[in-house]
Image (cartoon, rainbow, N blue to C red):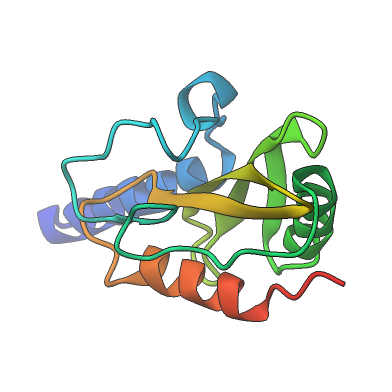
Length: 153
């Protein structure tokens, strides 16, 4: 076997190992389950936030925060490649893992539900990548799409 063949096989093995690791690496809820409004912002540009007082804000909904949380949890559960990592609607804070379609890269979306009184509430969302430095705007587009598509009854 030539040195080039060995090097190629070794490289392919490393790539395959990384791709498997991306899919099976455990997700620590203590690390990823955070309040979007108080969480430290990553130094890398692979994150996005939509929250009161931020550049992008979620709408105000005519629902109590608990009802909004239950509706959002059902909405998120119906999204492709999305599963809840931590929290419950009763907690008012939930974090979801959203995996990319091709490779299965995990992104984390934490959502807090904010009671505004008088049967109104809003939410704060924080979406960020686990691996890599940049995300080509994936997290920003995800939040925009989720906010556009989320229409609680």
